[in-house]
Amino acid sequence: MTTEAPWWRIGAMRLLSERAGIDRLAKIREDFRGEIVAGFEYRSKPCSVCETPGVCCLDEHFVNLRVSRLEAAAIRNAVSELDAKARSAVFSRLSKIDKNAEFYSCPLFQTGVGCLVHDTAKPLPCIAHACYERKEDLPPDELLAEREVEIDKLNRRVYGKSEPFLPIPVALSRLLDLPADDRNGDQQPKEDEVIPEGQIVPRYRLHHDTEQQ
Image 1 (cartoon, rainbow, N blue to C red):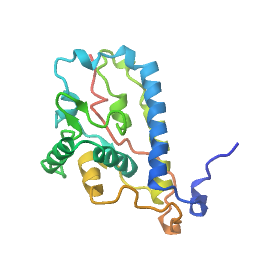
Image 2: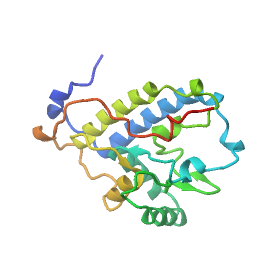
Image 3: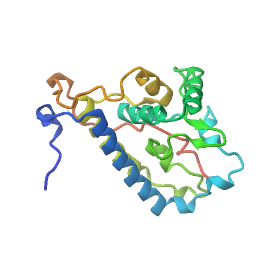
Image 4: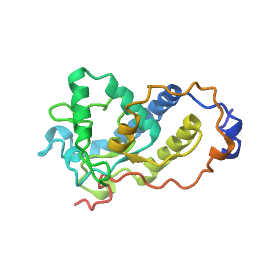
């Protein structure tokens, strides 16, 4: 059995290419989705019967999701595969968002369609979010936290260092002018770029901690 090397030996490891990192991220996402669907989602109110469709994504006083650089890269790739009209709409929504705002209306939501990256790059907190009538039915925070640790490790395998998780509009805007895969997979991280593992600060709250009645 092989195990991932501890952080102090990461400098001796080959970096993953961004494409390989995105593929591994997809596996983390699908495993997490399976856990949520099988263990929790059936207790929630279906989006199909929501009286205010899309409010979770469009209410700029509600959404304060943060994503890693690798997740932003996966979203960028997913947006690049949309048709020209949908891509243009995403860019237009991005341009109207205050990049200094703590909360924002998600530019990836399209009225009448839903999340444009639902099947390809949906962030894990969005997968975990649903309308639960009882607080005790919510997925435990620990379930997401474990996956976030995996994502942080994966980011360091791709980029050689930990980077702050940023709001989707900020993270995505920073990557729009970069090529889809700007690493060759052979570059080694510099020793002074290696950051020890630490506690992962919660990067989101889709008002997950709001009292549910």
